[in-house]
Image (cartoon, rainbow, N blue to C red):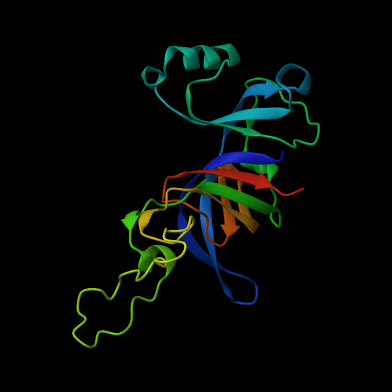
Amino acid sequence: MSGILGKKIGMTSIFDDNGQMIPCTIIEAGPCYVTQVKTKDRDGYDAVQLGFDEIKERLVNKPMKGHFKKVGVKPLRLLSEFRNFNGTQYELGQELRVDGFQQGDVVDVTGRSKGRGFQGVVKRHHFGGVGMTTHGQSDRVRAPGSIGASSYPSRVMKGRRMAGRMGGDRVTVKNLMVLKVIAESNILIVKGSVPGAINSYLEIVKQS
């Protein structure tokens, strides 16, 4: 199995055999269900679509109801495709659990980062502010300062770092080690932090 869907529970820390504290993230991974199997002959590429987190049937529109009914599973909130399943054959409706991972595996975790709204350049791009608060300057400490020349090119160049919307992006953190797998509780503990807020959805992909 190359990947699974999960939900971020929160962060904690554990101690290794040498007494060193290791920050880690607790993820509720699975159970997931195979909702579609795509093949190169029919769809142009090979992939397996997984579904996670059961929801009430009234929250699903008619096309998706038919999609889940065809597979024989209850309506699911999150659907995502995974590739590189190493030629393993999967059946529609098959259940995938966290026991496909082992301690010591290296995974890439993808999620949506926390949305920060509209932010200035100091928070968004780590600007230091304009000068010191001297010579009567009192209200422009966190201002971006000059953004372009007047004579040439007489315009603001594309890509200029300025204030704007921050966060809410799809972010992948790579090379996280699996510290512990608790199969009976569908819990996956990985070293370090992962994107997103508590209860946000994650894609966990095992490195080959």
